[in-house]
Structures are given as structure tokens and as C-alpha cells.
Amino acid sequence: MLFRKGPDIRSSEITPEGAFQKHSQDRRQFLASAAVLGAGALAATRFVGMLNPATKVFADTQKLQTIPSQYNVTETQTPEAKATAYNNYYEFGTDKSAPARNAHTLQTRPWTVQVDGMVAKPLTLDVDSIMKYRPIESRVYRHRCVEAWSMVIPWDGYSLAEFIKFCNPLPSAKYVQFITDLNKKQMPDLPFGFSFPYSEGLRLDEAMNPLALLTFGCYGNVLPNQNGAPIRVVSPWKYGFKNGKAIVKFHFTDKQPHTLWNDMAPDEYGFYANVNPTVDHPRWSQAHERRIDSSPFPKTIPTLPFNGYADQVAGIYNGMNLKRFF
Ligand SMILES: Nc1nc2c(c(=O)[nH]1)N[C@H]1C(S)=C(S)[C@@H](COP(=O)(O)O)O[C@H]1N2
Ligand SMILES: [Mo]
Image (cartoon, rainbow, N blue to C red; front, side):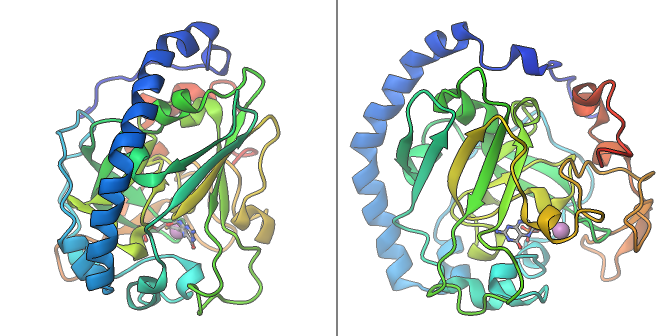
């Protein structure tokens, strides 16, 4: 395997008291640096954003400093031009090419993120301070859409677990919900018939797996709007729809949160959405996928259990019927 085997985190081990104490030092430092760095970083990004409303230009001028990751796959990467032009982001249209054309209307700075629900203390944070909390890794991940296409994308971020520990969830919290911005003015193409804002979520033990990435960029640039700027989640062993874009709220809860696709069609899009070649979508097979890479025609390749990340994540689901909890 290409990966180091990750620690097998069980829900009973999530957010023990000791972790909170160990973390309070980091937390104080983070709050201090957030206060100091917030204003300058915010001014710089707004300036660039205002000069260059076009998303592509914004991304090109916003290089990220990244460190290497131990979690890279070695398959051929999808060219940046393809990964940023073929998107699912229904707030900006249901066509795959629509988000790249339309998403520039979303203003991604200033951007505040709320942390609420079952946490020691609700927080309102500036996205730039969240981005600076931990070094940004470049992680080359497989990215598998439920519609049976896939890409290989270098995402830039740090483990969601780091941020969750910072959020201080109560021991009773069992899930974290990610809620996307809903701004009708900045989303003039919002289609009818969807229960926006987009909502997704993970069980806390899934969210604490080191593979789950709090993502700010891709290909070494800040995320283009169509890929979820300024902050999104990437959980590479799950179908792409789990990976909410443009997050404005992390809500901690003890109940399985509602999710947009599960609301829309519960028999087609389960809450867990683990990539599973043996559980077909009611309307198509999930045994294979079309890999969008550098070749002009996507190759059809077999889909791997947990998208090839079974060594890291299968343990999370020990004893669970994955055909029932799909
Ligand atoms: N807010 C929001 N997030 C979203 C979606 C969406 O429509 N709205 N689509 C999801 C789906 S179905 C996929 S496959 C991925 C696509 O991410 P990408 O466009 O960066 O490849 O985003 C997910 N996150
Ligand atoms: Mo998707």
C-alpha cells in the first residue's frame, strides 16, 4: 500500500478529557495568532479579489505554501484545467461546466465560520485564521463522484481532526455537520427544488480519521470558487457529495444530521456514502469508474472498496452492515 496505516480511532476514544487539556495551549496560541494575523491577511486577499473578480486570476495569484504529505497516491493526476472546469456545485448550476462559469459571483472574503451545537463554547472564526492554524499539506487524493467518474487531485489543507479538537466538542457530540453558505444574491443561478443550504456531515469518528482533510486549496493555489472556496471538506474514501463546499458552519450534534442528497433521494444517497463497488446506485453500477486524467478519453477502471483507502478507514465500520448503511 501507498499509505502508512492510520491509527484505528473508535468513537469511544474521540475527544477524551486529556485531549482538551493538551490542546488548550495550541488553542491559546491559535486565538492569539488569529487576532494578530487576521486583519493583514484579510486586507491582502480582499485587495486581490477586488482587482481580479475572475476566479482563475484569483487562484493564480494566491499560491499556497504547502508541505509534503504521507498520504499521496501515485496515480496520474488530473490536470488542473480539468479539475477546475468539470464540477458539481448545484448552487451555481446543475451542469458540470456551470460552476466554473458562474461561481465567481461568490465573495469568499471576508468569510466567517461558525462553530456551534455541542461544543464547550460556540465560536465565530475568520477563515484566514483557520487556514493559518496548522501547516498546509499537499495531499494527492483519489476523488470519486457517485456518478462514477473520478479524478486524482492534489488538495491543500490539514486534517479536519486538528480543527475538530480545536472546536472542543462535548463528549456527547457524535456527528459534525457542514453547512454551505446560502446567498441568493451571490448565487443567481440557484436551481429550484433543492433544500439549500447544502448540508453534509460525518460521524465524529469518521471526521477524526486523519485522511479527512479540511481543505483550502488545490494544485498549490487557494481553491477556485467552483471547487469550494474558501473552505471545504474532502473525505477521499467517500463519494464526492459528502465533501461540502464553501462552509459557513460546523455544527456538532448527537443526532445524525440531515444532508441535502439524503433528503432528496434517501434510497439513492445514503448518509455514509462510502465508496463501495458492491453496492450499486439504484440506477447504475458502482463497480467501475471513468478516470478523468491527462489522456483525452477517460479510461474505465475498477472501483476499489473505500476508494482504495480501506487500510486506513475500514476499521471505523467494523460490525456495520455496509449494504444497509450505504
Ligand atoms: N455546496 C455544495 N457542495 C458540494 C456539491 C454541491 O452541489 N454544493 N456537490 C458535491 C459533489 S456531488 C461532488 S462530486 C463534489 C465535487 O467537487 P469538485 O467540483 O471540487 O470536484 O462536491 C460536492 N460538494
Ligand atoms: Mo458527486
